[in-house]
Image (cartoon, rainbow, N blue to C red):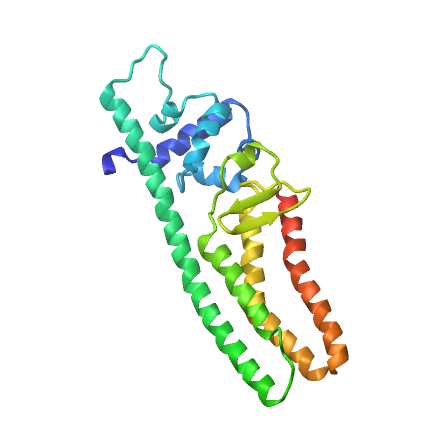
Length: 257
């Protein structure tokens, strides 16, 4: 497969040349493609390649063909491409796709190395707090709730969530996202690949807070407040807990929309 790999350096130089011919900045090109200017910079320096789904829009913006992008040079319209050359170009696309999949698997493995120990800590913490509450006759009915919801949401945000969502979301103003059993609706805010990574970051931070911080906070309220006051504060805490996810989600989604 090595013979079919795209020369990242040549690809980056070609992209840079085409962009400059159109007097576009990296930021302007990034804006047209709904990516960050840092991503464009990495392409041009040969440090990374664009997602395979970006090849067509990138070619359209730079007014070249996808074949020219993959070949890293302009191809005269009078030039014909034989079957062997076409086969090689197709294999380059396949290699690029495999490279993306390998990167996704590597990133997910890194996230697992962090998330699994956090789950273990959260489970041990919650069990110890529950035992303490039982020994002290402290009503802590919702103690498991925060950890359980945090683990369930965390499994999606840390492990199963796609790093990129379908191009349909970039081409249309869609406020709801569905992925299997996972559902999310950000009324008034479009979900797309520009803000998706920030949405994932919020979900990951929130899930860890649910598992580790909120059980401690909830237990502390039950210990130091009377039952009546504690029950009221408990409802307030649950409201803050829910808002702690959806408010930041709306903020980052809107900011990077």
